[in-house]
Length: 174
Image (tube, rainbow, N blue to C red; front, side, top):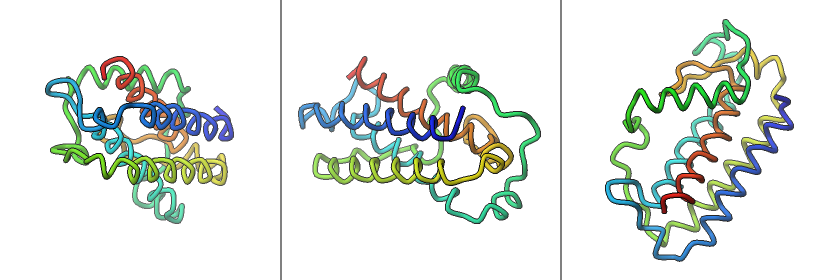
């Protein structure tokens, strides 16, 4: 998938999420299905997921290469990444990974801040996606807690799907 298409996908998925969140009644921010994250926790989780990616993409590329290595396979398609993610989700049976374990419940006062940060981080990722070379997108890898090491192009495509996945969960279950 072309990097401009990926950047547009990131924009579309975040816009859909934020639009949905803004349209919800204020009291729903701190609510969720029993034994599930609240609406606010869903948004905070997505913020916690995108920030480390943007931080990594801010590092000099030689540091990423040194720290994580280079890809040893071709880049997967968007659909293949989604399929692999869905399989991995089934395998972990709802287990939460490090950054989002024991997550606090964001208050309604924090809603505007979290949504603004999500928008800012989304814009940063779009910019960085367009700016990075195709060679680096396809050869440099980053670790993912569930998916393992992935080429940067894949992890950015996964990020778009991850936002969509949580948006669909919110729409269907909240």
